[in-house]
Length: 459
Image 1: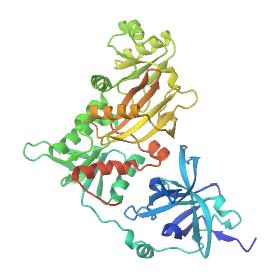
Image 2: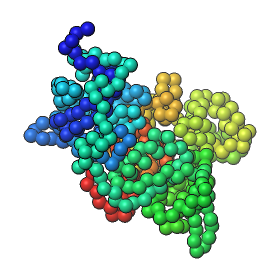
Image 3: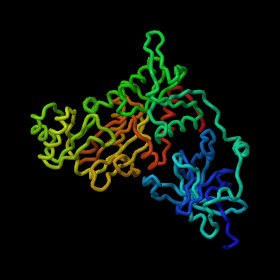
Image 4: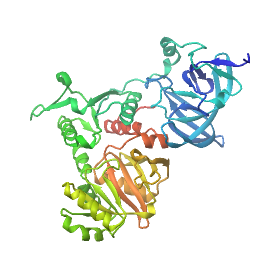
């Protein structure tokens, strides 16, 4: 065994002196080619006529109050396929890595690793010729204590701003919910996860209340972020309405969420506000099937369940006979359906524009899996960064405003007639769009609440 090589365990502590990061725990992974550093709020800029990038990092795992502001020279941009299967464009920097008594220069990509177990991944390119790995061992070069971390990062602690924010949702382990909780905590707020099914309410004209499991009264909240899954829309909106009656600011109102969940009404509302959609038909009786198919330009066409979500309950009927069969089958189940023209030139792609407080904060193109026409990420679709046109941004903002949503995921399809709106989602997922764009969208949602309370923070 060569004596000049460093022997590391599967986990080690290291530092990045040029970035001002005195200690960070790294996963040592010879199976990964490239090293990756956790980063949020990533933004390129010009310095001395050269390309640089600035970013923030929470170097301590499970501690989002500690933030280091970093900047480094930008050496490349690469498309990387993450461990979760998303293709994303990442910025690449070059900086010195210090580990044990050794220091050398490595390349690293910057990406949001909030869903990963480690803030740093040390890949084999950075280890080549220098390191041997004993996967059965950990911290062969020493362990860093909690007290030592506190002293190293004593000047990076963010003070609380005093806002008490509740996340009204169903699953605390969902990526989107975890990110919103973390983003709020990182910006110094007191965050509480409120499970919808464990809330119940007291209707009273003078003193309305919401109680939580064990009889705890949910009071003194400044704001609520409703993240209501379609299957519990009725109860989730009832709770949101109750918070509104208690004079609590709700990022999306109950009325806005309710109308966004009614696909037929939402399309009618969008049309009244001048937003173009694919030609759509709606009928109640199978006897209308023939004319309904003609109404949307014939086959192929799309048949949608009004209650469907994440691409479920959406069928492509390629022939008139298939369309008749699908429509009649749904009708026999007393299901409410829409039929919609099929935009062939879209080629299995659509755009998801994420709107927060009247601004498009991120956009991705979703592409359907081979043999699939639905581009939803939950249906195996892939996401990539795209720059939306001014017209597409205008449509997304107009649609969110028409639905009275502060937070909305707006789905748009590109057609020969121009951009057409497919759907507006009141609880859009964050994983695909944050993973592809490296943007802190959860943070933008928290900023929208801060704006309502005129909270200013330098983060």
